[in-house]
Image (cartoon, rainbow, N blue to C red; front, side):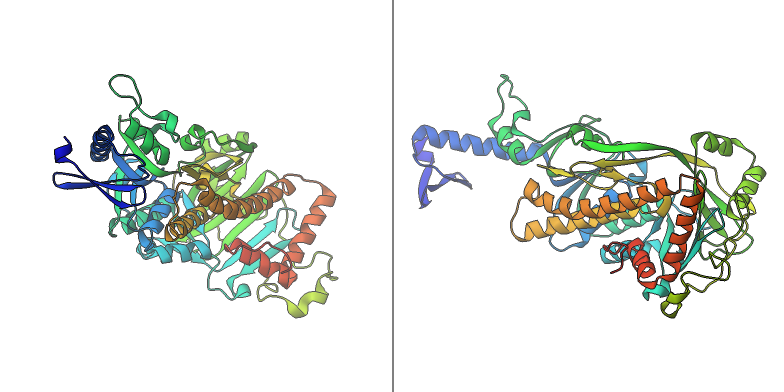
Length: 512
């Protein structure tokens, strides 16, 4: 055996072992004997066999929805991460085929209001051009008002020197655009149409040899790889597992991340409706049981997101279409209370002293939303809740999107927070690669957590506060809400800050 083996010292405690046709390197060898040489060669052969027979990836993204695909798209478009080997695990059959979206079909009721910050992310990743090939609706104006008739606010993109406040896009269009972007890039991805059943990310989880003892190679590999077992029997390994699998995240469960949250005892009814004219604005009215939003989705269609009690949602899902349309118009017009007036206190406006510095939208009169004439889709009902993972990251595992947090939909910010997670994580991974860090180490992942947790908790607190403030119908509180509406309309620094914050800028809605 020694005649076939050449041992050459190439540096302190480092030896080069040569066998026919191959070179192997063994680090930190302090003593070389014949038996050690044979053992080292066997380990290297075992390692090579393990590498050839096992599916290994740099990143495994569990969940191929919009947020998971946004992460993959960002990784594919970033020079430092585009060479990574990525697995995407999702049983959704849409990932395996090209979705045919017909513009002549009515819009799907599942839509997202993406902010200018999200649009910028999509453009940087190369996905927004695919969105623009399908139906979408930019809007530059928004009106928010209270059912009591005591207050309203008008927002305009010009107030912050922007062209738009946001864009309403069907979820299937966003998802298809991200998938098209990835498919047209030179990106090493493998899609597994399966579900995650188990996951281990520590050395003690190594599989065993035929004699029941742990494999040395698998013990070594498991030390820097997480192992995932799928429902179809496939096993794969990854340096980093990303949980992008929604509010009922299997990754979060298996990694034992604790959560905090509660149910709102409210449901959201969503659907597509039709007008006689095209809608160009976003509208939101706060009603006693919850807000109703009317969002443009292109052509003469709009999307309804109506928050109400579970009992009311059951009733409105099952009622006739004509009755439902009548209820929608009642909720958006004179129902529950009168139209607001421009002044809270008659001819004496407590904010008149601020008029010299009002925004361009402050002096716009209250408008009535366009009348709904038809129901253009099925009505869907979703229960509402708040949930937040106490931690986003551990060794080899990280959470993004609804797996990390779910929020009330009253401002349409949920998916934007998820997209923010995806692009922030992509950037942190690239920064780690740039300095030679292990992308699965918790110290690196905690940089992502620190950045996103502050942004997400702040938005969650704002939305939860709004939800609670508008869940009480009480005279003095109604007056305070009206004062807040008028203040937001006429106090320019506050108004600009609110619009900027809602547009995705990481700045609190304060006087800054």
